[in-house]
Amino acid sequence: MELTSEKYDIKSMTLEELKKEMEAMGEKAFRAAQLYEWMHGKLARNYEEMTNLSRSLREKLAEKYPYTSLKPVQVQESKLDGTRKFLFGLSDGNVVESVWMRYKHGNSVCISSQVGCRMGCRFCASTLDGLERNLLPSEMLDQIYAITRLTGERVSNVVVMGTGEPMDNYDNLVRFLRLLTGEGGLHISQRNVTVSTCGIVPKMRQLAEENFQITLALSLHATTDEKRKKLMPVANSYHLDELMETCAYYFEKTGRRITFEYSLVGGVNDTLEDAKELSALAAPLHAHINLIPVNPIKERNYVQSGRREIEAFKNKLEKNKINVTIRREMGRDIDGACGQLRRRHMTESEER
Ligand code: SAH
Image 1: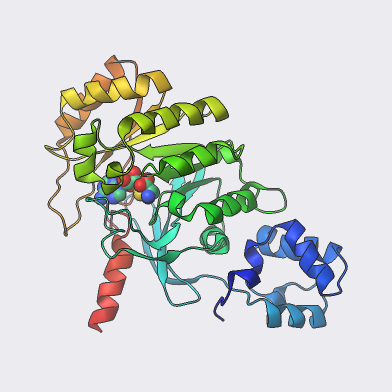
Image 2: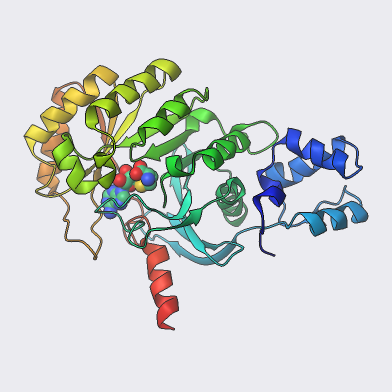
């Protein structure tokens, strides 16, 4: 059944909202808590599973609120590290991808926040066909719920780093974060949640006001406006100095250190001079730097920096007392870069 209107998207409602809905239907308010627990605690796939609700209530609910879940369309598992990539079908036939990674400290899921993306970063596969639509809060949650059911294992970390720009879908993102980390659902610790943005300044400021303890990651990728504009069109709208001021504001307001993501692109942003400039940006913010060897996509001719350049870049940062990690490349053997699985699926469907 297709979700026809956000108004009837029951899995995106808070407990308070559900109580009002129940009362409006002439039901007791405690039914809302039962329903909430089925949806967000027990991860029910349909109303039929909700056996402590009467049949007539379940029928009434089904009539008014289509209950949707994601359908796994394709799963790829890495032979190298067990990472799994899922392609999920949404109720309107669109598809999104999510990644499940197993770490020593627990399982991590990387979710998409939009179908496609309109930010246009030059090295990214998710943006090649532009934005199709925003994901609903329930559709962001359902990626985690479906993966929890399919793997049979608890998810302890969530990163909003898949397809889409979360700050371009701000209200749904914030609602999703509340449902994900609140009591009665999966109740994932906010400290184990990371939201990654290409740097939409007004939304970053707004997020600072929400009182979350999540980690904000900024996709920086370049240390001057000139270089950043070549990689990321969003740099034409927000300049580095206001971006850094905003990061300082976020840090001050929340006490949470920002992470800078920096994809190393061979011959573009990987010199020792770049590392020096990056140190100067990171130091005053005590920012953590995550270096990502760029994942080449066939539509563009960017190449990864060499192992030696990457090591030298990292050493330079460390010498400058910057906290830095090189992102472990998980699932190298399964459609590496974000958005590639979905794109391949779409191209293949067109050819059929
Ligand atoms: N829109 C958000 C989140 C999604 S992208 C953002 O821009 O942060 C998640 C991260 O992967 C971003 O840092 C993005 O710049 C990076 N990324 C995208 N494509 C990549 C590629 N081909 N190689 C390396 N990093 C890539």
